[in-house]
Amino acid sequence: MGEWTDPKFVPKDIDLERPNAARVYDYLLGGTANWAIDRQFGELAIAKVPMARTMARTNRDFLGRAVRHCVRQGITQFLDIGSGVPTVGNVHEVAEKLDPRTRCVYVDNEPVAVAHSEMLLDSYGDPERHAVLRGDLLDVRRTWSRAVDTGLLDPDRPVGLLMVAVLHFVPDDEQAGNAVARYRDLLPSGSYLVLSHASDDGVPAEQQSQLELVVEQYKRSSTPVCLRTHRGCTSFFGDFDLVDPGVTWVPEWRPDEAESQAPALLADNPSAACVLGGVALKE
Image 1 (cartoon, rainbow, N blue to C red):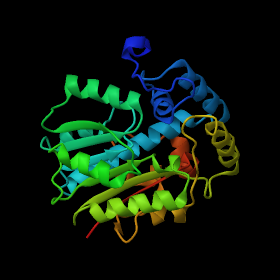
Image 2 (cartoon, one colour):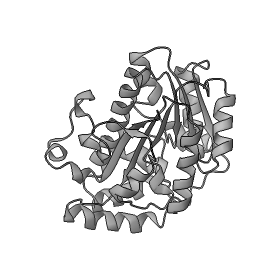
Image 3 (cartoon, rainbow, N blue to C red):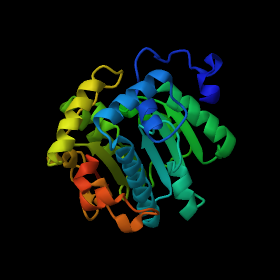
């Protein structure tokens, strides 16, 4: 795993006693910012849900399509909350292919994700357009203020707010709903909210039973996961105007904007992705 297994690169407050969702997700995507405990956890997840890697990749592809859509609608600044460990197809990489002026602030509460992001941006980013912060998505006012204080985000201009595959790690419905509502209030008119969330609402019986096993497995990690219904996921968008096709299984969300096609299995049975996603506009 290279330098990330060298103790001198381990952030002081990292918990290596339990696997962490950001690092497990990185492993499923083929990344290297993970430890043995995360890889073991990931392999257990794959044993229970053989499509786990495909599901992770499909969610990542949704992120790319959503970012491209936002840029094409004129969005030039992004706030990615729960950004995780950097891997191929980061927000700023996707966005600047369409518009080199775009800016992005990444936020995560996992020290490895933040440390790895800092190293990536130091090597390949632009400090005048990219930044990373360690923060808690539930601490809305502080997270928003610190993101604005970087000088990269203009709070008076439309923002693309990304909360992709992060809210299912906030099991309390009221806590999650209130936090997202406060972010919606802070966004200026013309902004977009991009969100994806794990769900077993109407998924095939085989995947549903597999998901139940994985949910139980995540209870033993530092980041327990929860599943929400289509209605629950849709509620996060409040009164924002959903972009067609609305909240749907991520392989179905504007596949024509993809640079690569979904695996045949998901193209024929998109609910097997077990992740719902959507994009909405604040008028």
